[in-house]
Image (cartoon, rainbow, N blue to C red; front, top):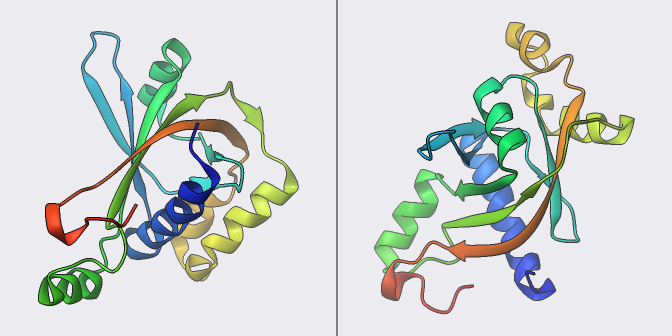
Length: 162
């Protein structure tokens, strides 16, 4: 289990990652034991060490999760100014990345609130041609119960941050 005080620190790291690069990486395990990594732009974290993501397009990921529901998400703050300021100071102001490990549920239909939260996150893209093509019919969700985390460490630059 992830302690509440750590979770309160982890959630903003994940939010900054989405702001800077619009996705995090989701790792699953292929049938032969090799890793499979895919970008997921729809991970939404709740306050109780859980979250959910829309599972619409990733057929290999879906197969892997159906066989082994253990997953790892990697969220990285890729904002260039964050990194440049940190490098100049010789210290990060907040953790630059975090890995979240957990167990994924079976597929379920998204609630209207979950769909609304997702459309709110991607509202910036609404005027584009791809908005409706990619995200107009998102409705299938998997819940995630997180039970462990690993911060990205870089020695002195991240010491004491998480």
